[in-house]
Length: 128
Image: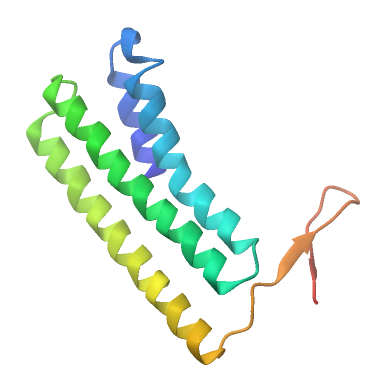
């Protein structure tokens, strides 16, 4: 979704560069950034909260795309296609949020493995 939004906004007028374009790019990037940040928190509750924030960013993308359609930067058909794609993203993210809730309740899943490296720009797993 993030890549598609980046391609889409290239069609928008230059006067939207620091308005709608910036908002769409930020919101679309925020989805995966929140998931990644939550992963680094190591605790189910925090991870779940960051996933919920990512979910909110998906709804923000829908709102910005609605504005784009109202301003006639995209067609109604394109808006509907993006909404369908975002609905798929939401379904996956909601499923993952439910998984985290069950994992927390049963403590059936290990906390995420962390990665860190300070040598040779490589990434090495660290087991706690």
